Image (cartoon, rainbow, N blue to C red; front, top):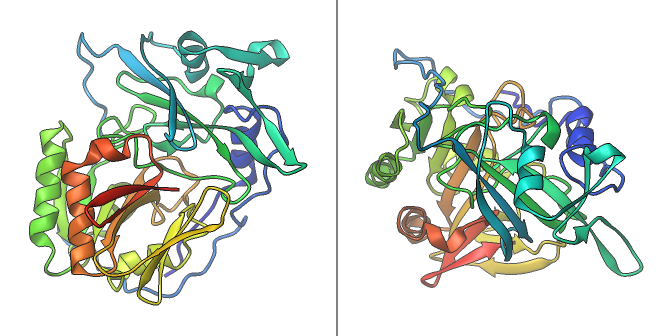
Length: 348
């Protein structure tokens, strides 16, 4: 089967020129313009499982607000955390201007700096750094001025080095997003997809999701998952590296914006600049995310996500599940985390 790992040049340009990159040239496109053929993986046949339907979350009187988060280096430094009242047509650009000290150009529609941090072009030994814009943990595909916020949204701006990863499609650190409020006011169903022998872990995750208010959640084996669910859900994949969907995520790891991947029985991690950061052996877990690779519109669609909850072995997967279900405060605003030696380590 062919999967689409697409970030159209238009989406990259919009992100760089409109969504908040502070005036530097758009990075080179990290994704090809055409679908990339990946190794064939057996696709579960369509079954009679009920098909998921995206929903619009109900709006209550107390939920006419959105959160604005400003961080540096994926939450290594938190700069702003504000809740603001939004109206029917409040844009992400309106919100960031209300919540933070913002410098603009071109009539106020282009953000050149937030909290005094502006574009760094690199060169002369300095890093190429800029602002990147997420809503509910998903990289926005339009500019901040074109994104209308919905009640409960988490608008997250992160300033980081983009020399190694020009675009990171999704973050785990805005949990419970995007499972709770979705994107563009549409909430996709959540399916926890588990490898044989990991049903109890999958049920623990579904219970945790329900406990924080997430609806339309179900656990499935890979064989039970329908084609429609695979394409049109938020997926949390639980299993070891030999589990078919984990393998499909691991092989194109660089294209998916990951800072960690499995190789020769170990988990290798990289820092924000692309230098090797660590190698982890037995009993190591990983939680990382990207946009859903099975979405027919590719990972540039900005619609739904896939989270990898895996590890180097059974103990590693168990550590990742424990981190997700009981230690979420330790990866707030992070891109990804490693769970090893009873510690939760941010990656990058």
